[in-house]
Length: 358
Figure (tube, rainbow, N blue to C red):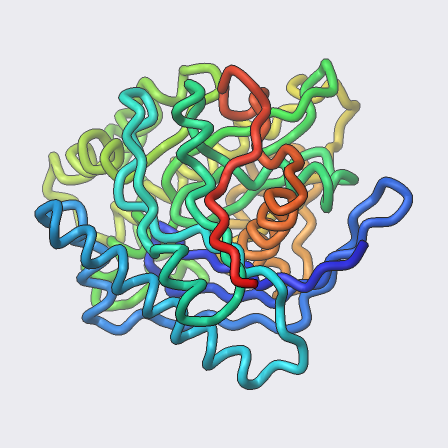
């Protein structure tokens, strides 16, 4: 079986809209993939502001934005595919997360799949999280099924995006995964305070100093002592992390340096060999925008006893879009695309609304 699918991802760090045109082949019980072409469409200041402030809208305004953002995605897809040699049979869109509070079964990713399908004329799968959350799960992370099927040779798969998340087989050979800590969603915000869109290679953070009381307060956040399944959202960040960062008059560079140390410590703490019952050193595949930050990778490497693998740039930047493309294929096949061992749901499940174009 072969599929051509367009995977679409928009992360919490608001870097832009990722589009990845992917080819999948299933043979002898294994999935193989190829990314034909991928691009990140940077959000305009207007769209960044709309997505950033969407949680403050009225019900009517949010529904309107849901449709308009779906239309925006559809237009971007049409433009992208006009320069591609292949046309996908499926579009698989994560959407952009506005609310994620699974403990009260509240979840919303905007970017209406019906509007995307109507705008592009291509069958579209969207809203991957709602079923799992209503089954008592976290609805996140969703990438681990893709880690298992496409990158199963690695002991750990770590994504360094707006939040860091990790996936691995535990001692019982069951796939587990969870969000570790905030990464780019905080680093980018602090860099903006210093007048930069992001902290290239960690230059701003590298020039700062570790503020020990701040580091200790960050590392004592209760979430880090919870056992998985667990996940993070923007609401938690605003209620827990941001107040800690803002409680003292500390320079931006010192905040950055301290937060880098915090992130490296939390990630290294999740790369322990006793979690996977494998003799040291283990091998970790690292992807996501944070992987391009050489300073962050240096700090993680120094604090862990793990051999870090950095793949090709296209996989670094588009692994999540690639895996969401695969989730769409699994949904169309009515195969499991969300694991209860990862999210804590009652059952393994097959999430996603499908909007068919015949």
